[in-house]
Amino acid sequence: MGVMYYNYVSSEVKEMARERKYTDEDLFQATKQMIIADGYEAFTFSKLASVLNVSRGSIYKYYENKDELISEFLMYEMNRFLKKFNDLDKSGDFQTQFDLIIDFIFEQSNIHQVVEIIPQIPISTTKRVEDNKSKLSEYYVDMYEQFQGFIELGRQENVIKNHIPTAVLLGMIFQTIAIPNHFGIPQAEWVSSIKEILSHGMFEK
Amino acid sequence: MGVMYYNYVSSEVKEMARERKYTDEDLFQATKQMIIADGYEAFTFSKLASVLNVSRGSIYKYYENKDELISEFLMYEMNRFLKKFNDLDKSGDFQTQFDLIIDFIFEQSNIHQVVEIIPQIPISTTKRVEDNKSKLSEYYVDMYEQFQGFIELGRQENVIKNHIPTAVLLGMIFQTIAIPNHFGIPQAEWVSSIKEILSHGMFEK
DNA sequence: TTTTTAAGTGACACTAGTGTCACTTTTAAT
DNA sequence: ATTAAAAGTGACACTAGTGTCACTTAAAAA
Image (cartoon, rainbow over all chains, first blue to last red; front, side, top):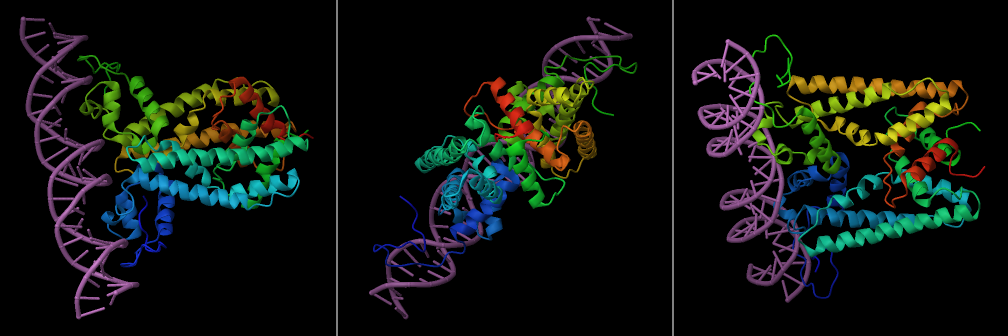
């Protein structure tokens, strides 16, 4: 079963005990920063506890270990991403949606670094971690299918070249958001250049 | 300066002592596998020693610590890559070179994961590491300039769109080689699809 | 055969992180 | 005020890795 949070709503709960020093959001936020900065291996309970200004022991009240915490964090992030994605306006034609989706992916650009963590979680001893891992791969398939539908629309409208496999198209779109902008080109120019290349290539016709 | 290797050639050396159990190439090869598989943080002398079937202590004969070993490994890899790159035929027109270079980068696709390690080496206490880090950034600039020259050629021949910044073009080219081919599309189709998108985009004209 | 010397070993003391748990603190309900 | 119970703490025993060093081994040269 799950942990009983301070804001848990249930007729069973008669007492609330003391207030928490940090919310799940605080914890996931800190986790995200740490994982984006230094990756999965460098993440430790010790560092997390010191960022949150709590004792390391208190985190064990909610998560048995690092893998469990990170798998819960990934669930939270994936959920958040998919919810926002589903809220996008799907009514326009392909060109409109293409713009909307590329802009959205750039906005959510760290989802890339987050998703890359999934395969790094080792085979776990605890059920909660294994459950989360299988749910995460479902989410991944869900996301892939959404994007596949989008590509399908492009093919139907004869905007997208039919001989290029969907996997390549989606791979390109997702990978390009991770290009490091070392030279600090302004975001607007950066995004529009990438849209231009994805749409019509680098070459003059 | 440096360590005296078993195959060191010098009039000073009168005796060779025992043969080494592993060459630098063995060591760098193992290091590469480990870093590509699990990243910088997960790399330990303990694991490396057990892969090489030697005692951990013997590695300290050649490298003071992990940072030093990895910085030496990166020097070796960068050197190897740049040498091969310089050997490419630079005589053809832009289209010919474009094909040659994309194919080459795909062949050397793990250079990407290797180069990404550079900024992860922390500020070091030892001179050898700091020297290597500054040499590595020189190599990086060198590499960047080579590719810049290539883009320049494309612009002169009016093949490449002039309004797209070089940083975006190079970023695109380098990033696309890292797209994971999850669905196992045959290499030839994969590469030609990516070339097609880079050159003329995903859209029908 | 003996000597020299680099290569390699494994034990030692050390550090950073883990997971646990008896204990203290805080709060809401009685 | 008292009490129940979750939140939080810090000390403990443990594990995995680090860096060092006196020692053993092997091979080339004398």
